[in-house]
Length: 186
View 1 (tube, rainbow, N blue to C red):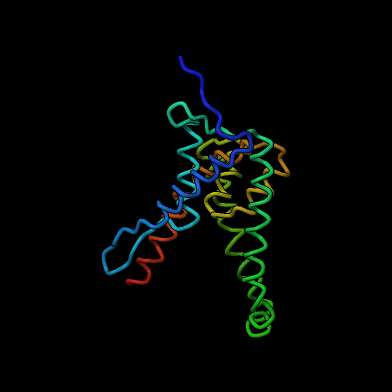
View 2 (cartoon, one colour):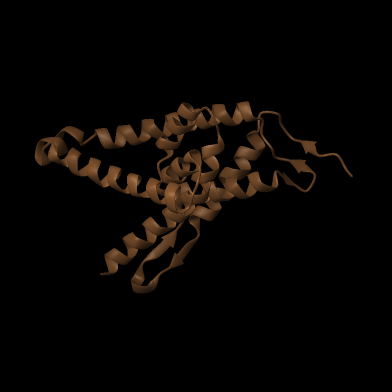
């Protein structure tokens, strides 16, 4: 058996490869009936590429596994950038929307977020008999909420929740895109 080759200890090759493959996957569009299109986008493409590369852990003799400490650091850095970008974009019109719509907008948002979470947790825990961590991780993935995953990992002190997140996130992402396209057709 031949020894695996490590290209770099910091994992930049593996990250770069996942990003490039993810962007390629993100650019693939599938036409839908009624003139719509489906694409994984910049969220789904890199996630699928990362899942595939992480599953195999190597390409031929080239080892693409990354040390856990580096993965944790990159995850926290990526989450920080994501929240910064989302906050900056959402904050631009925050005061205007709140002034126009009133505080009931927050109540509606809370209900639309909390009710599906409780229903999802009940279904996962009671019907599917998933563990607490798998139930919570899958709910984060079903909501396509990366910040919630980061918080869950931080609170539970385990990466076990990320597997359930990664299993449900692509399905939820596809369903969100498809349902919005079909609603647009109706």
